[in-house]
Length: 76
Image 1 (tube, one colour):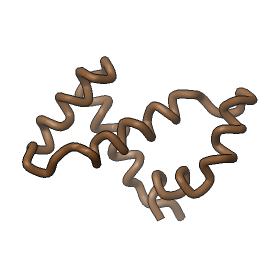
Image 2 (tube, helix red, strand yellow):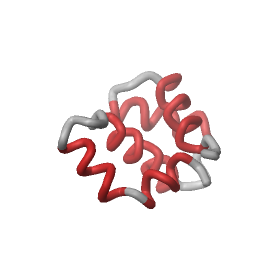
Image 3 (tube, helix red, strand yellow):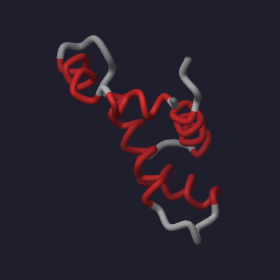
């Protein structure tokens, strides 16, 4: 199971934790970025997707890559 799958599976709990200040709201942004990446057309190259997301979320492409990498990381 990836980190993204775990987060989506426990979405209601995550929202409660964020609402109560236990988790950062940035987690929601990271989930949104990952989902946005998956919604982009496959005809667009991977690097171009990172550039588009970086502009949209006002982050560096390196930060976008880090977020995607973290979301794809396997959870034990």
